[in-house]
Image (cartoon, rainbow, N blue to C red):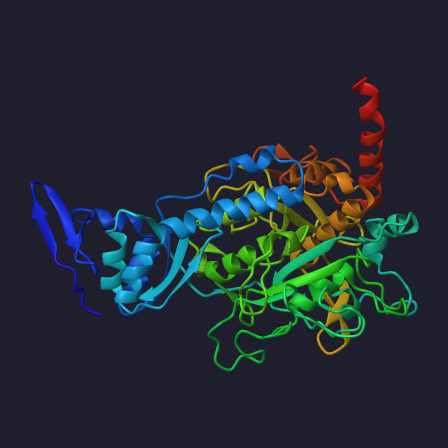
Length: 505
């Protein structure tokens, strides 16, 4: 598209007459290029591309941390984010519509997805109300490997080794199975009718199904996808998502195949990948939907229906286009401010130090999980810290969990063994659901529940030194605080609750 805006220089300032025939200040010379992710400039030079416009004004969510309940935090964050987006996006949207540029508005960060050419990019980046322009490439998930079973389950009712290892059954025996808790998952989608998942789906009441507020599809343009576009019901176009959800909640109605951590919890889901390909926009869309789930038309958002914890078994590596490490930072921080725990797989690029290097596992706001084996050894493929991609030197992972040779649900009513940190993260999301059901005072208290999970973990030491921290120190940059222990976490929090009144008298 030709640039139809005519610049005018006057007294050293540069103005531009836009769609409304009103002048506005624009960036002089090539300064506008400093706003644009360098990889995007190269990518778009030969044609059209997708990109994200971050507006100059972003919502202040700091007030959420003074609020007590998850419900209060969720409503506050939703109100702050939507108010800023609605108040500031109008002029930019009007120009996009005038230029007939495909676009989609977001409020989880004050940003707009756009598809266009170099001339459009330049015109938009020159605007004062645009602070930063990020690329939105198609990013392929590093899918876990299929592994042969280490054993055939002893019986249909046998609990898997990984669930036993982290001592979830002790919490079940105490009466806590995740009841009253909602787990969210964003992944390749979900086979909601799999016998291990159906009864746990929030949209199913035992007699009929209503997918409003329990399912969202962020894939809108994927010719040939087996699930189509904007699927009106949960659908898994690859299998990865169904496997991860089984680790969180899976068990069949008759008690057979107990593969999940929190069989009493409910789940809701969002498809953020097109057969393993995601973008910052699709990830952000799912995060946004989780803060305030909507009906199937994307209308009537309701933060009261937000999940308590979200599992994220995916990564957005720089070598596949996510060259700006902070592209999803404000998005993840908004989820945390809303009182939602957001769990992230560390990645499968180990054993080298510094391989936790992809959004969103790198963020302090993310609770990052490495992988362990049945023998409580760190999986060789599990990515290690510290985080160096953003120069923070941040210690990661936070904890580790079983990830090698994990049996769980798979589309078509079957079960499959997979390995990867994609399998580790769901253990922690399930553990959080157990803790929330056992100790309701933890709901919405993200920092507190993270501390409980960390400090109750079983230490794992290695001979590896990463980031100057020896592997026999706790925490370390290989396994974090150690392998999770759900029962120990419950006892730790129970002791804290019993002791607190004594020390405050």
